[in-house]
Image (cartoon, rainbow, N blue to C red):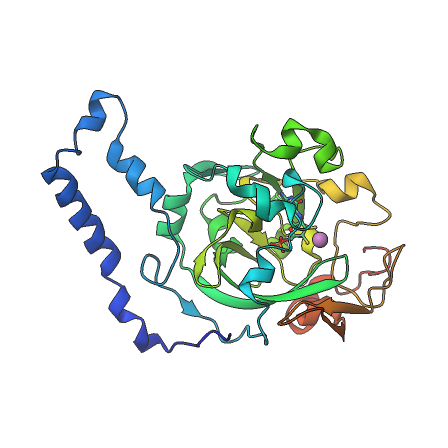
Length: 327
Ligand SMILES: Nc1nc2c(c(=O)[nH]1)N[C@H]1C(S)=C(S)[C@@H](COP(=O)(O)O)O[C@H]1N2
Ligand SMILES: [Mo]
């Protein structure tokens, strides 16, 4: 399955339908008397209905495919959504697929605060109103030496950070995953290997502002499945998978380098930078090659590329740094 790269002139048909649908729904709701009842109970029922309909697709949020970021072949959807790491739901690869249905993604809002001039708490709907979605096919490389090619739907993190106006002393960005009581590893810490949640990750501010860094709300032309980090997760394609924090509720700009979940568990195995690097082995295995998960049974063994193949675009971020020390 390959994503068809659409030319700009082909998307116009979708541009007006969301608003039209919205107006029609209002009319229908008015006609059957739902509009207005909500206020009796102190809730805006239309808001509730709208919140439930945050569906990501070409009609609801028209997007184009960025052909600069193309990978082939794609990993099948069925594999990308059943072979996951999301320790809040268990430590086995199939656990998130079986258990992440209890994740409450609606309503969802994100706090963006810290060293910024205009901190905000913003709903997912409002984020989507302000950001332009794009589809990008990125190569995804887990530190465990498996990889996938995934078509993400998202927007550049840098565009979102502009909204809060970072202060001059903001040097790093800290991200936090939601903690919900229904998550299996919150109810029973042994299921998550006693990892201390919330899951946290961090980037240097220049990495966060790099145009390759996106926040994804969808994949394969659809809303992000819960097991893949719905409704909003980080994608930094030149770094190992664990940097790509899921189900984000807070983004904090900070002065000092943040400590991420995996680094706090074992800093000798998982560093802050976690740039994909075939020349620096993990203490327990080589990173020179990877198992690409594609069609069919099993996998293809392929060589791992420096910065996961994005070196031309991101290499300059690390000019003069010893990447053996800063792993
Ligand atoms: N909150 C949270 N985010 C997380 C993880 C996690 O356990 N919890 N696992 C990370 C790891 S190790 C990887 S490889 C990727 C996996 O993303 P995927 O399941 O969409 O392939 O998510 C990352 N983000
Ligand atoms: Mo990972």
